Image (tube, rainbow, N blue to C red; front, top):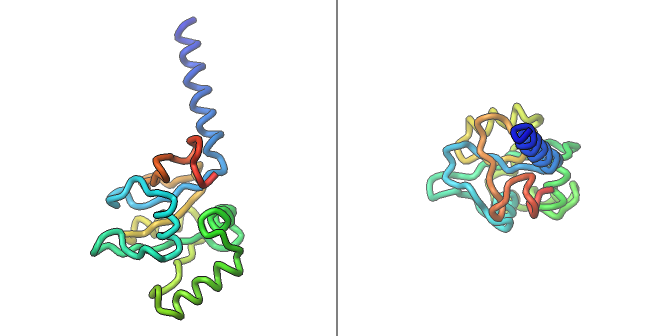
Length: 154
């Protein structure tokens, strides 16, 4: 009877964690990237192009889901605090003023995201937390992972 109770406890805990992370957006990088935890303001600087290098010799390559992806809508609302039109104008202006060499690269699926993150050192992307491709590292934001209380991309 004690083992059954323990099993049920862990089963409910795992299910609760999975449900909590459903809908969360995870920030993902290659496993060998020397970063594990960023503040929300650092994440914002990465995604707005204000931080263009992980280190002196490793450039940040920003991968963004195509319009109409739920994850993109959440990132625009939470990280950028912009509409789709404002986001497009932001990057046009940033490139025009030569504050960035180019805008983010557009990805159309989790599979494409995974392929490019694996292929491009320094690439950073976001995916639905319940669908993180194997082999990618999920960055903590302010010490929290998707599904944890207080995670900002919920």
